[in-house]
Image (cartoon, rainbow, N blue to C red):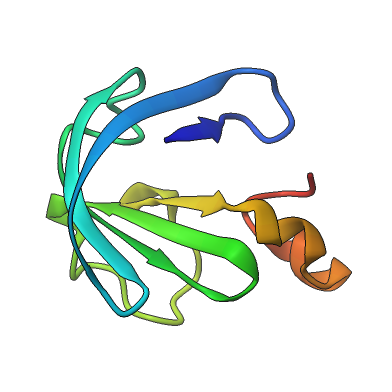
Length: 101
C-alpha cells in the first residue's frame, strides 16, 4: 500500500499488508511492514471501502472506536483514496480528507 502524506506533498508512506479475509466491502488483515508506524502501525487492521473510491484504514486497537457517520478523526485511522476518487463529484473531492488529486 502506498499513501500520500501531508496533502499534496511529495512524501509517501508505504506498507506491506497480508489480507486474511474479505467480508462485504471490508478487508481484514495484518500490516507486516511500514515506513510510518505512527500512521499505519504494524499489526491487525481493517480497510473498508466507501462510495467514490474512498477507504478507511483502522489499526487493531482503533477498530470499534469509530462510530459510523462521526466526523473524521485521524487519531483512529487514515482515509485512503483509490483510482475511482478522481471521478467522484467535485463537492465530494473538495470536502474529503483525501484532498483533491
